[in-house]
View 1 (tube, rainbow, N blue to C red):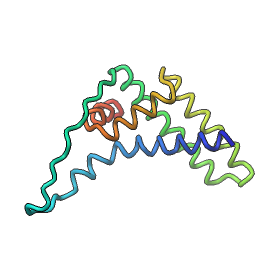
View 2 (view 1 turned 180 degrees about the horizontal axis):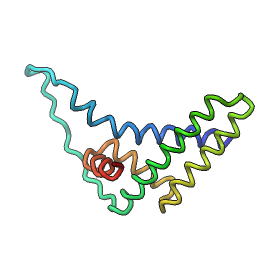
View 3 (view 1 turned 120 degrees about the horizontal axis):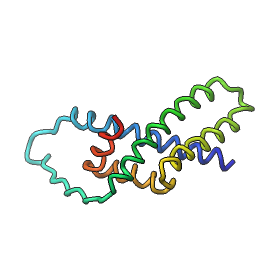
View 4 (view 1 turned 135 degrees about the vertical axis):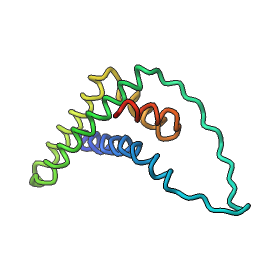
Length: 131
């Protein structure tokens, strides 16, 4: 059961990483309404200091996690119900290994992706490394 939970967590993290790629485009497409009642002053982003080495590792891990997720998504879609739990466990283990092989703990990886969601500067740096 732990593998299933881990796989679900990793799927969420992979979607988070994928969301980083579409978020800037979606923001660019939004049109701000006109008029004095629509003026909202955004709070300045909180500067976050993630070392370049960690950003490099997170970007490499995110790319690998995404590939693994896609591979297992295809297998899970075609697998009989009896095989799904085993495949989910394998996927979770493979994703965890992809992160750890980059020299990050799972918590570091999750934290970097969460920070990137909130901080446009970190998000941009991460996206540049993911290209």
